[in-house]
Image 1: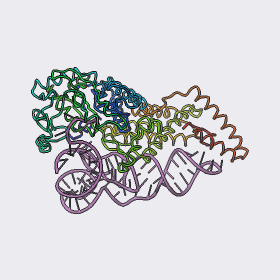
Image 2: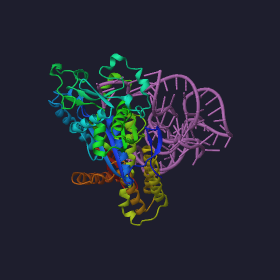
Image 3: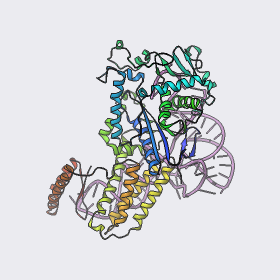
Length: 495
RNA sequence: GCCAAGGUGGCAGAGUUCGGCCUAACGCGUUCGCCUGCAGAGCGAAUCUCCGCCGGUUCAAAUCCGGCCCUUGGCUCCA
């Protein structure tokens, strides 16, 4: 049973075989650091992260590179705003730091390298020079453009034809370009004032003017084009041919198409062997008036829902499909995560209880662990079908609940195996917080205090003072402590 | 107009690569039963015979073929 993925290049499902048996070269098309990241970005990261984790789980050494685009008009447009900084690098650093905090908060595995455009200008210049020398690019007024007609395979990723694009652009729109589909590899001069004005936020003095960085080049002072950066950084850190390139579906054309063209024209080698595109996150679209509050930053979402609920939300739809973010979806995610977490805690507690010392054998439980691992693996190998894999985990939760609820004596080994499956599959692969934070210090004391209150409440119950008992339970609930009565006495969990 | 992704039961969302185990997984919601002093959690059950529309292929189609409708993303220095 091997991994198969949907490759945008072929439009079909293909068996995944990395160039090297042990290593996987993974490039994730990163973010332009001109704003705080929102849940749409996080969805891409999360799916790339789960792919990374699954490949590692299957024994591969994953070399993960993810760029930050820190040279861009959108960044210069923010200069001087809200104390973000007085230069392009300062503004970029401000947002980069924020984005890294978000990534940590989302429990993403670290990439090996997070290259920045500003640190790869020499490589970009070299790449552009190579393209000019090979006849795939031409200089025009100090800018350099890629000549799409010179690259035979142009359009192979997005399935478009150069001839058809020809019809779209009127001659006067071409400006310095020979063909309307040609794109800039190197832009002459400083930042474009028009582009900056377009992204300039209100309340800023337009006379401040753009203050973007510029670099020397054989064609004069200028800045790198947008698409070239990914090619240069990918090649610098992972070589001419990578295994997997992950990106948002909105970037297939022109960005990824152009990456393929310029990279392959320069090296003569395949740029990326598998192109995996992540579907976009939709909001309740048509309420366009409230579009201000319509997009959630990662920051706010982390605050409101917590990592595990956010990850569970993303885990309920395959990476390739679109997903809608709304209250109902988040509520469902919350319920699903609670269910998993409760079952996990029940398994941990039961395995540690006196009833587990008898250690009977429950075939159903042990069978469930085994079928969960099998189903999970099969689902993940099926184009990273996270929803199916998640379903397998929930089946395990049911099996644990049934065992803990029905059995007089517990199957210690079966419970341990279940706990391990939760931690391995749900924790390591899905990045969910199973058994993560060790309880200590204040939390332990709080737990002892709750126990104390529950003892008091038990006394009230035995005395028939149910009003008082319910009051205590309600008050604890208000503090985030969920009380659960059973034959064996009360238990609780922190929400 | 062109390219791409998608239209599945109250919601959400797998399944379509390799047609039958799909009278459609997992979950959310609702209802009921067990449990409980009550509640929650848990377990069990019900709800939904149906997979955008039309036609075709087949013993058999959500899954294959043809046509149509709709939604979303992209279409040149803009992520």
